[in-house]
Amino acid sequence: MSQREYHIVVLGSGGVGKSCLTAQFVQNVWIESYDPTIEDSYRKAIEVDGRHVILEILDTAGTEQFTAMRELYMKTGQGFLLVFSITSMSSLYELAELREQIRRIKEDDRVPMVLVGNKSDLEEDRSVPRPRAFKISQDWGNVPYYETSARRRANVDEVFVDLCRQIMIKDQRRYPHPQLKETKRRKRKKRVDCTIL
Image 1 (cartoon, rainbow, N blue to C red):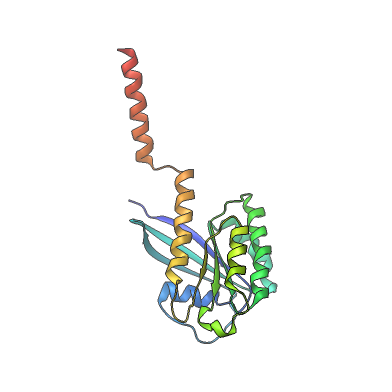
Image 2: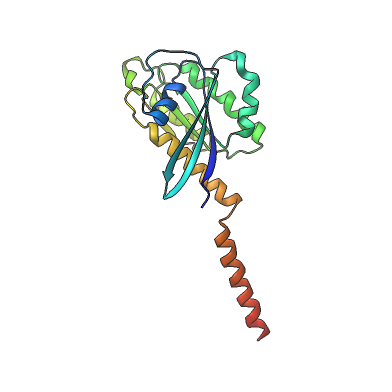
């Protein structure tokens, strides 16, 4: 049986921990130093709800100079992690524009996405109140919201699995399982045969 491949794009402003989150999920490593990303791509096979899938994860640049590449990521991506830092209110506000851009490019209001408040281990430096982030996630059509810590590996797997699950559900609606189609076809045929008799 062929494994489904899903393309996930990790977006957010610079320094919010996108690379740390991705590296922790894919390789179980914590990156201590900050080195601005241009673009990194990872592959990871996981099992979600009994199905084996391969995630192609694109860790994107947060800096303004690479915005031209963003449109291409948004066209090819099937699901999006929108990451901000709980220590930076502006990093949360920047995501609204990214979300609008995704919806415009995809021409779809129900694009699989997860809102991620990273750096939850820096609670004493928090500048984004939890209720504020929850309110935004609700305003965005009840987009799932998680607070993560790449350093402590808190909720790291959960955000990727949740996003993968959303893509799987959307994928099943678009391409129903071939066996289900065959079963429906047989049932229809039986009904037709019965009417002939």
